[in-house]
Image (cartoon, rainbow, N blue to C red; front, side, top):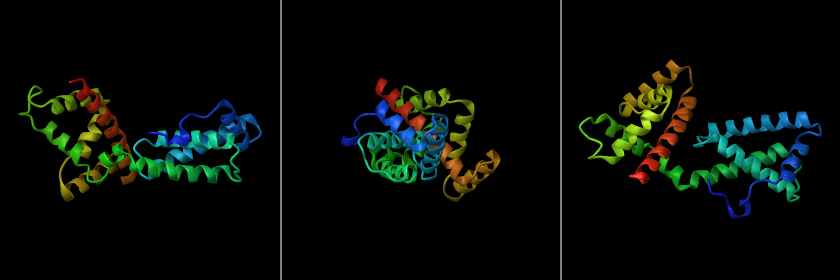
Length: 197
């Protein structure tokens, strides 16, 4: 994610130390509090459909550390962190990549159709060749999940995803998040492959 101009650098050591001190005066408890806050932020981004929840959480903590180091008056660090997280999520949702991957998922559906069309050869269809290569590079579990996730159309697609979630012991939202992370990885791989062709 591109940083806004006022957030152009990562946190300083002093900023990070200041954040830890604000979370708890004891260094061990501060470290545990930091990890707990990070886990909470990852869940925040994951539940709201962020492409890479961990990156959103890390960006939030970076910005929080910088603001504390700059002397921003913060009475409740955790509430302030959630305010920053909302802004980061909004910025992510406005990014070109988020617009590309949101909605009815037509791009990957089209790529899955290319994959299902056996008559398209690698020489005739570079996107298909890149898709094949990138699918092969995924771990077997991720490859199976993403292929199963994009099977069927309309109501059959909804029913298929519900069965897949049940089979994996996941909620619909957890399945959607997991598929989105695999899809994001696949899209990056395809973009790199296409740039190299």
